[in-house]
Image (tube, rainbow, N blue to C red; front, top):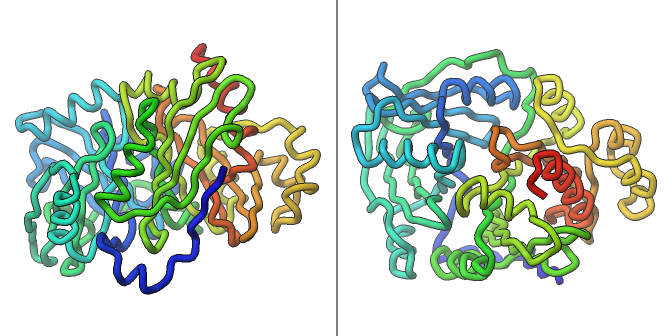
Length: 381
């Protein structure tokens, strides 16, 4: 069963109880932020734009801010924990490995957003506060979501600095590609425990006013060996989309089960990145050492019969192992990386949309079989 709510009336958007401008940043806690920033600069073609560390007053942590178009990643590691925040970060990396701790949202009014969320049952992580420097003032608050993940609410309309107060502008670590590998964050996927998907989709409806955009259950999202269920929640403008996955009972361990085991609980599984030219993106990233999931040639033998014509010839799709899906609104091209750290947890999706606002339903079986092959190689299927 698939449920869609694409066309949101303007009046509904104007009445949005929890308006958001978009994703502000995906914040990672990592063991070595300098090396992580270098990897995402070289392998993903991102540009270092800001830094906070001992050299400019941050004695406990080092943070590197990288951007590509509107997509912003922040990598933070602990130098020497001395506060609750530093101890939390150090403990998070020790327990979970490198992972996402914050899906930060830019909002027009952080105080109002926080008040609405708390009033509707959110757990507070940080009450609203102002932080300022010569570039202006930012208002910040934070609420908790699944696992140890949080949503920081960032109001930055009165700020023109490189990221936040306390950060200084930084030069790129390496020369970025002449053309961007991607332009924006498309969606961020969370994995939660068996039986808790509905609880968290209800959380986003109640606490943030998000709506149920799509759902995938039963045969939609199963193979011979493993299965999962997924619902997608989105804000009123569809700028922010959060699929929530939970495992389903099957013959063998699903990718969600593997993630929960190795991450040590619920968290962000993958981040989808919009690209205007997936062919160039995949070629550039492969050349830089990024590993993508493989797809059998048999997938492409009948691709044209059900996916129709796309801007990329089938032989190029076959060469690069890019997947295609089509729905009533258009089509999309997508490909998934292997996990980008030693633990089989966080990975990325590159997606090029041509009208379709879907998530590749037609590719689920091929994708999950590819993931199962990797699980088997790791001994985790």
